Image (cartoon, rainbow, N blue to C red):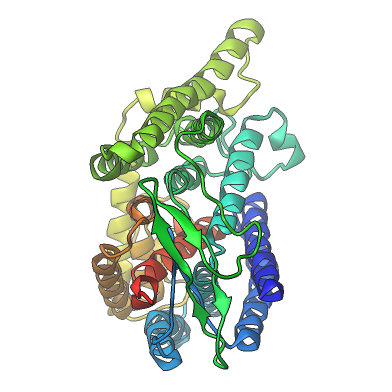
Length: 468
């Protein structure tokens, strides 16, 4: 058991490193980055598949307890996993159908590759959650998120990585597009809310020839501590006690840096989506007595994040006459509400719908790149700035129907994701902003989204809820 647990810990570490690489490498926007980092994802997925086959078993973990899976047959699990993976196969096939009516032919293969990688990341995160390694992966994501924001504030980033910062007055960090950088920070902010007070533990003992993991734990006491029976690998528990002032200070700093990323990006769309989803989290979770310490940390982090986003630029402007911290002045854009961005989005949407209609809503490889045929005013944009419009053009009307139905089923199932409300809200935030911007054109955001989707999908599964 110890050897298999070590394998899954290494697997979680490898996925965490790949996500970090996707952030640093221009947000994984360019084709070469999709190929190189994507190859790493395939290698990691193959390794995870090999580990699953070698183990011949499965484990499931739930908030505050070990979940036994005896009685849940392997074929039931296989059917559930297959049903979750089928939509990815559909999107890959629809992407390749774009070769029948191409605008830029190789983009059909690129879209198929993109959805293959998303399928791998989704399955991989489900398996890591099943093996109790989600807290380890979550730690990697948050560490990378804080480094992502902090490095974005450092002077000279545009010299070290010339293509990374296109608007030096806003936080573009390594991505170079402030709106997407803010969306990444906002998604990780809600992921940080998943930390407080949640206990995930892998434990139990190996029983029987089938290698099933038998849960040996039970709840004890008013604080919900788990008294585990059977063997437990050291270091598998990532409990964060809400009463610890050290943990509170740590979380406050994490919230501060991540919200500074939202604030300093200067993106009004990110700020509005973040505000609405955060208020929803407060109404659903923040009012629970046991979560109030987390609410205080989050609110304190918001205040500290505002200061981090405002003070550097102001101080340097006053004393040096220049905002040398770059992103320190991005927040001023939030104070100027014009219609330029909104008008551009309407223009992109109108042109995308015209292109889809001209193509009879059939998949078209690189369909958006035909926009000069329909625009009224000349402009340049490599993306329609909407994930749904991108699907409409690349996978056609069938792709939109598939994605919408998929999302509706996922949203309905997410109501059963006990203890994962913040993960679901992070998904809601990323979806909401991706509908009005080019978020999912960047692999780092896509990886974050499908990792969280994998966690949420397993959290609402029968396997997750079953009891010994």
